[in-house]
Length: 129
Image 1 (tube, rainbow, N blue to C red):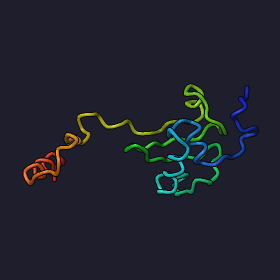
Image 2 (cartoon, rainbow, N blue to C red):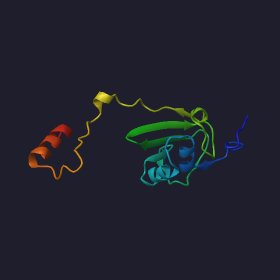
Image 3 (cartoon, helix red, strand yellow):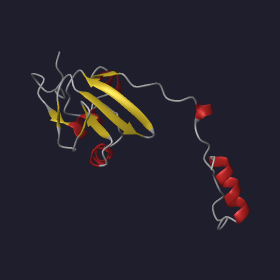
Image 4 (tube, rainbow, N blue to C red):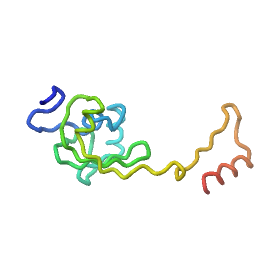
């Protein structure tokens, strides 16, 4: 059963559109920006947003601080629901790092002004510098 979003006969579709369609990014403009920044690779080559993706291609995406490695199993043209999107690729991504290994982010109160020298040293110590 082919949905209207699926490209008949396998075909090809733009990589930025496909990344957005299978919900790897929230917006198509984020997908296009990732391509322009060099964060998207197809079969090891950096690609532009208009590059065609076809069934069997390996797509590597660096997004939100995480590497996603997926193999295209189905080509879709329009954005699909999450259960259908999972069927469109095989996820070979490494698991995300545990929360205790992530770098803590220093948060200052809004309106606290410019950090003092002591505050700067504390921030640097927290970030591991």
